[in-house]
Amino acid sequence: MTRCAVYGTGSWGTAFAMVLADAGCQVTMWGRRAALVDAINTGRTNPDYLPGVELPAAVRATTDPAEAADGAEFTVLAVPSQTLRGNLAAWAPLLPADTVLVSLMKGVELGTAKRMSEVIEEVAGVGPDRVAVLTGPNLAKEIAARQPAAAVVACRDETVAKRLQAACHTAYFRPYTNTDVVGCELGGAVKNVIALAVGIADGMGLGDNAKASLITRGLAETTRLGLAMGADAHTFAGLAGMGDLVATCSSPLSRNHTFGTNLGRGMTLAETIAVTKQTAEGVKSCESVLDLARRHHVDMPITETVVGIVHEGKPPMVALKELMARSAKAERH
Image (cartoon, rainbow, N blue to C red):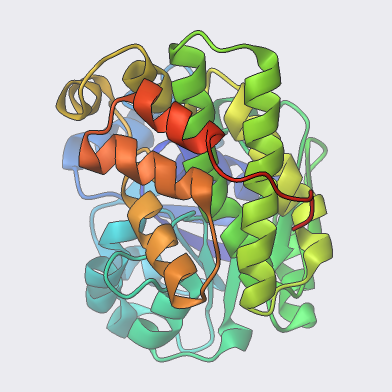
C-alpha cells in the first residue's frame, strides 16, 4: 500500500487526503492544532474546514511532522504559499530520501517571485524530478463530496507524474499528466488574481459581458507571462489554465472570487480579511505575480489593476475607468 503524508489540514489538503485514501493509499496528515488532529482521528471529520464530511478510515492525523513523514512515498504540501519556505525548512530533514514532494499550493512567493516548485527544490535540496504539482479546477468542497472532477499532475519527469497519477486516480477524480510544470503553476497562481478581479466586478454589479471579458483577457495575460517563462501555450487551454480559471472565477465556493466580491461591494481590505476564514491566495500573490511579470517585461493590466485596488486603496470604479481607457490594441496574446 502506498504511504502518503499530507502537511496541512485545511479544506484542500483534507479533500486531497480523501482522494488518496479512496485511491488505495494510507494517508497521514500533519496539523499544528492538537484539537483538530484529535477530531480527525476520533470523530473522522474535519469540523473546521469540511464539517459533516466523513473521512476514510485510511486517513489519520498527527501533530508530529516526523511521524507524518515516516515511509511516505509522496509528501503532499498543502499550506498557504507564503508560509511554505519556513515550514519546509523545518520538515525537510525529516522526509524520506526518495519521497516525491507534491505541491497543492497556487501562489508565487513574495520577495523572490519564485514558484512553489522552485521554493521546494531550493529549501528541500531536491531536483525537479522529485517535485510534482497537482492543479486544475478542484474546489475542495466538491471533491470532498466526491463529485466528478479532473486535474493535472505535472512533473518534469513523466514517470514520476504517472506514479502520482496512479496514486490519486479514483472513480470521481481523474488526473491527467503534464511535464510543463511552469505553465501549470502559473495557471494556478494567476487565476486567483483574475478571480479577485471577477469577484470585484460581481460586487460592483457589472454584467456577464464584463466578467467574460476579464476571464478571457486574464487568460491572455497569463499566457503571455507563461510564454515569456518558457511554458507551453497549450497548457493554458487545458485544465491547469482555462479549466481552473473558469471554476475559480464563477463559483461561490471560490475564496478569491468571494474576497473580490466583498471588495467590489465597498468593504475595505481589513474588513474583508476579517470576514474571510480561509486563505485567499490571490490577495498576496497578486503583488508577486506583478513582480514576476515586470521581471520578464510582460504587460499584465488586470493584475496591475487588482494590486491597485487590493493594496493601494484605489476605488474599484476609478480602477475600472483606467482599465477601460487603455489604448486600443489588436487581439493577440
